[in-house]
Length: 362
Ligand SMILES: Nc1ncnc2c1ncn2[C@@H]1O[C@H](COP(=O)(O)OP(=O)(O)OP(=O)(O)O)[C@@H](O)[C@H]1O
Ligand SMILES: [Mg+2]
Image (cartoon, rainbow, N blue to C red; front, top):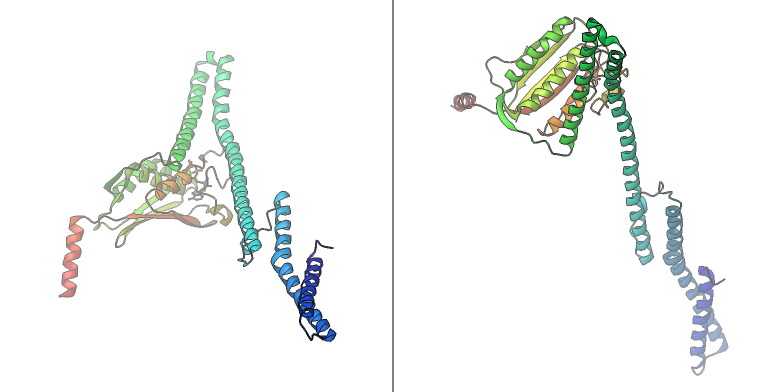
């Protein structure tokens, strides 16, 4: 009986009212009716006060703490949320809220660990698959040669070339992975220099023109001949960004398609758009194409398909330049990838702007 609030209140109210009655009985001229009324009143008032205090400030909070501890013990932290962190006047309420925030922090930690474990599992599966393909292929050719094909001069050369090609793609994959890893851990340093972005894009297009013309794909580059497009960035890395984006626009295009590269300058930035009229990317895939190894066409052995690391590297390089890649795409119509870099004004442009400003204020 003494373990709940009513039992304790009853005992305390009884003790208080008995004390009040005893104290009053010591006074002269106290009638029995007055004693009874005083006893009754003090009993009910103290019973009510003690019950309310115990019920709301102690027992309810203890009950909450108890159920919370039970959840923690069962590792069922899913129902714990920020709302349970209400402020309370009672010290027990404060203990309850501290336990709550502790459990919430643990839940977040568990979620992050689960996500990392999932990511690691997926990453190992992807990397094993990607490594397996060129290794198996080179291994197959070399074993066939060892099993006797080496005697045939023509087959020997053909198989050796194919084995070398597989090993080359293995090398590209490992290099890409290393680059990504170094960029993520901040080991790679960016070497910022000033250069004309227009010339860099022209160089990339020149390099890819041969691949594009084989499939009758036209690469068009538009810019303002009057303007200069000086930026401050890491030349090699921006080359890599443009190379992957323009190559993707060619690779994922249909024969006879079109790639439009445009370079525009505004007040302080240069904007590069790479647009193609190829197959486009479905909305669900669009959210994921910047993830490592993610490819829309799932067949990994597709002739033109790469490793799926290109856009992940692009994203990291642009982040290193405080820039961001954006993409819009419509299935069947094509895609457009854009990013911007800072514009560095040369002396001639600055003088021209100054003269224009003077003329407009005169
Ligand atoms: N312009 C585009 N049009 C349609 N799909 C694209 C385009 N660019 C990228 N994709 C899709 O996004 C995927 C990821 O591109 P990403 O450049 O990261 O990899 P990849 O080109 O397959 O390989 P890598 O660039 O490493 O050689 C591609 O596999 C392709 O499915
Ligand atoms: Mg690519």
